[in-house]
Length: 453
Image (tube, rainbow, N blue to C red; front, side):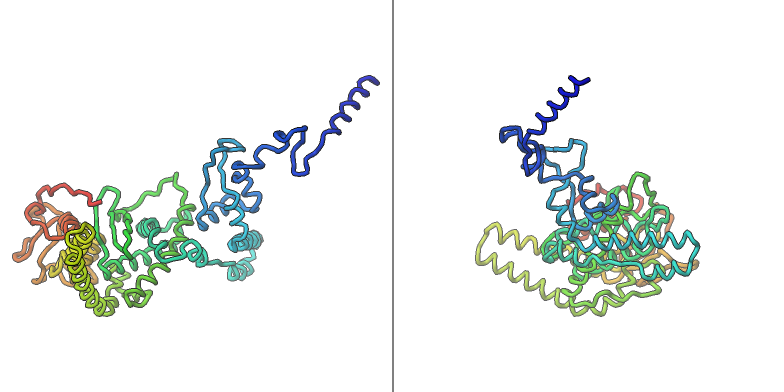
């Protein structure tokens, strides 16, 4: 026993003589082994998600929400010091999150929920209601200004925002999935206001109907904005989709689109938000509920846009005359001519949409194509031939085209008007002129619907 103790004591003394590096790690006599692994170089610039949660003292759900709102995403470093199965973030991104004012709001909300659950567990309902009135609230305005320093930056990122609004405006509130009613209502309102701007500015350039929905592309501020609007069917919410993440994206996009809509309406000289017609809004007339106020307010802007079109045409002609047949001048003139054709594709027509035809995309495309008035049958009461908000009934004498999607013989044919399938509207708009009616007559197989993208 004595010999073993002496041997153990001598080993301990030898270990105690090893020099310690003040910066960390064991100094073994050379500079190569004096630094710990992952403490210097590229590996030190990244930390795992668990380390980030420990630094910020946040649960995983709040960390995900904060990263989405701030626009911070995981990285894929070349050297993964902690293993290939970990999620890595840049060290500067996490340091950036530590100074975010929303972090304190999350702590306040966590404290509020503890107090609220305690009062509800004690069945102190009155105290819980008084506490709920003082629930901490936060806004995302500073994040919008931070992520989009200029208006052009916001327009470039508008594709995902409008697509998300169009998706949620087609859903219904679901308490089991924590989809609130106010989120659906505000998403629907913002999407309709954006559609109304596109109508008034006549900024729509392409449309395509697919099995996923309707693809639209508008030109706003010289940049193309493309979004997808789903079909108006009862949506089956898949179980594997985490709607909490999608609602976080929706929360930021709602704040962003408010800023964008306000700027777009201001450029047109219109008040924002536009007033809504309560009767049309209750009857699900969509954009038509906003059209009432905008018709009068947009008359002066419409005259101004017509003058602007003439000025642009004169400028293009002058450039072509000055620079001859140069490619840039020719391309400029062709682009102006194409946009002007789309704005006047359906000018002078009076169109009636049957109830079996999807009204929302057709109404949007028709107004962008220059139609003055549109009538529809959807939402009509028993014994009536037109829905609430329709410009005219189905037996109106001034109707030039009627959109039907029924076999021949299942509807009354009235003289003096053309009967076409819905695809005629989309194909004519993409071409920029009214296509022949015969291939799109009811009962016939229409030509292939080609994508303009």
